[in-house]
Amino acid sequence: MIRVLYIVSTLKKSGPINVLYNIVKYIDRSKVQVNIITLSPETNNSLLMDFSKLGAKIYSLNYSRVKGVLLNYKGIDKLINEIDPDIIHSHGIRGDTICSRLKDRLTFTTLHNFPYDDYPMRYGNIFGRLMANKHLKIISKLDFPISVSNSISEKYKNKGLKTLTIQNGVDKKIFLKATPEKKLKLRKQLNIPLNKNIFVSVGHLSKIKDPLTIIKAFKSSNINQDSVIIFLGDGELFEDCKKMARSEKAIIFAGRVKNVEKYLQAADYFISASTSEGLPNAVLEALSSGLPVCLSDIPSHKEILGICNKAGKVFKSQEPRDLIQKIEMLIAEDYTQLSDFAHQIVSHKLNAELMSMSYLQFYQEQLELRRNTNY
Image 1 (cartoon, rainbow, N blue to C red):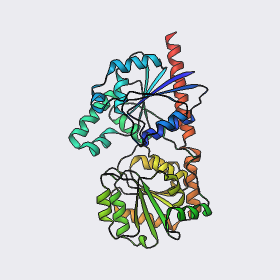
Image 2 (cartoon, rainbow, N blue to C red):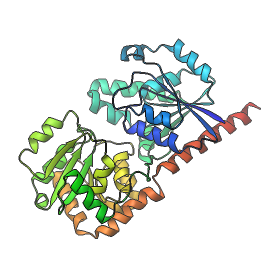
Image 3 (cartoon, rainbow, N blue to C red):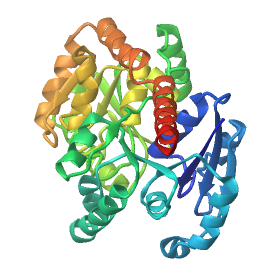
Image 4 (cartoon, rainbow, N blue to C red):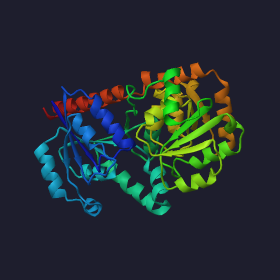
């Protein structure tokens, strides 16, 4: 039995925690004992109970953010020694910081983004780059950094850091293609127009996700006569988005919802205008639901459609006119074929079962190598 310890800030629902949840959900429990340390108090939007139902043993330290920065290493070290894991796997800068100082332990981290793209957008250019520099140094001290996409791995390589790639995967048992009858029923339930093309965009309304480009495209084209775009999520650009879309009936803001899978099943197409991503779960969830996609031309989006380019279109990032053109091209193609190709990307390649299996295989390989080396 392999004792694996995951270290995260909290189990708040987010892209990285969804990845962790899928790893734990589908990992072979006859071979792995799952332990999780969380560093800070949980929020209302926490998956702690969901992880508990999977049989994970969770240790909540409940450190404040200030104490988390200072890191009570003595308490953490004591807990780690009590758990005595074979493998310690962190997600995020705080967990990575803890793992970077551990000796005689196999340390892994999953790299969900590229800090030189992500941090400046979130925290400002100067502080963001300082954080990125710090995080890169921390990651370099870990045994096995794992990128969630080949495109992210290539970016780290250009910074002198070699990483393995295990691509993200989503739960194909939850994100399903809807029959025409089910789609119609869901549209009635969700109060969505029954006879229009329904586009959906899922994610934080932020500069990184760039929802304003999508709104500009819908406002300045004729596609809004026969189509509707629904934004699922909130964020710092929520009011700006609503202001730009004011009086435009084809643009709907549903806010943060708990039933994303139902909106995806009720929709026809998916749009992401993100300027930076690791390997976005939202796109994979849409594909699993059989939605053809229209994606900005960032490397991770190209990587996904590189598996099957017949599942959607790529448009020039931050270019509303090109987005309009690609949407019109997408609508003109055979929908049934597009939907089938979209679904196959996840069912054959980027699903949670395969992702979890890849992590377990890598754990086993490294443990076996370490045992042989110590003999």
